[in-house]
Image 1 (tube, rainbow, N blue to C red):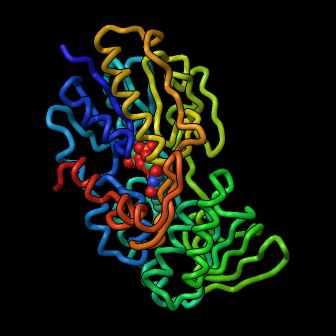
Image 2: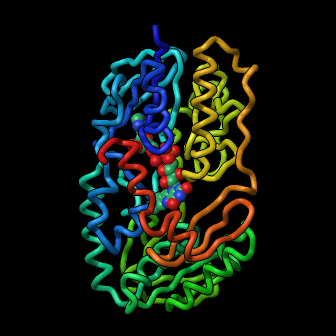
Length: 360
Ligand SMILES: Cc1cc2nc3c(=O)[nH]c(=O)nc-3n(C[C@H](O)[C@H](O)[C@H](O)COP(=O)(O)OP(=O)(O)OC[C@H]3O[C@@H](n4cnc5c(N)ncnc54)[C@H](O)[C@@H]3O)c2cc1C
């Protein structure tokens, strides 16, 4: 009889893992949203809402043998997962992939896909009407957002506010310098070394004034708070021995286990395995998890399996500034417009995820 695997959360980690083990195990994927949310496309969707149709992908074709339960998990123990309505999904192995939340309109609030569509429409309208745009936070999402708006709406006056003295301070200097140069070419002002204080909202765009750490004040027609993701770790933080780290993530051991329960794994944004909160990190965790679960199902002991090894400083990153320009770091070298456009800027991996969920 096939082993039962319960996967909690159908984001990049959970959906891909469920599909790839569908023919070797009895899979239950627990996911309250009606649609998979392709986050990288949500940035360009602010300037081009027509992208939403293909960036929100229904779950109904993902699995052939297993099932997707449209429900929210409320508890975990060594025998399985308890759902919000009290039902229990019994399992031999459990993978927690509950991911993270982010500001509107980049990720849904909770399970609300219609709410995300409405927020996208509303904010797109506000953006069209605005003259001056402030973007608070110059991580990958803030930088890409500045690039997308500058490309699609070149008449806007965009200010990107960074609390560092360069873009991507932990990556090779060339990456940040090249991106800053291209943003400036496109008319974006970058304020380095500034923190915005007393933001009116941390979770959705608003119109108003920003007070910066140097004491200056600036009015904007629209301000996007882009301050990073926060892990949805409530399911695992109460498990025996679980510990949290930055951004609300749960720490995992070298075999991606968040607690002393030997058959419970956690991966993706929710788990701090030494990687960033990215799909790039997941692209490394996935093959390890697939092989590990297959090994365990074949009777191996976990200790016989090689521990997971994070990317370290080699984690690649692709940063498009609209569909044509951008820069990337590809583990050994940095690349410019052509490579960034081919690998990501043109399609934003939308085709890849429509294939994964069998819509194409
Ligand atoms: C705007 C934006 C752009 C990005 N672009 C890139 C990029 O270009 N490249 C890159 O590498 N990374 C990018 N990222 C980061 C990337 O989106 C995340 O790393 C990724 O979403 C993490 O995947 P995940 O599977 O861990 O979790 P998520 O994608 O967050 O999915 C978690 C799932 O778990 C479900 N869930 C939560 N709680 C429960 C529960 N209690 N029960 C059941 N289900 C639950 C949620 O409904 C959700 O579907 C971007 C992020 C944002 C916000």
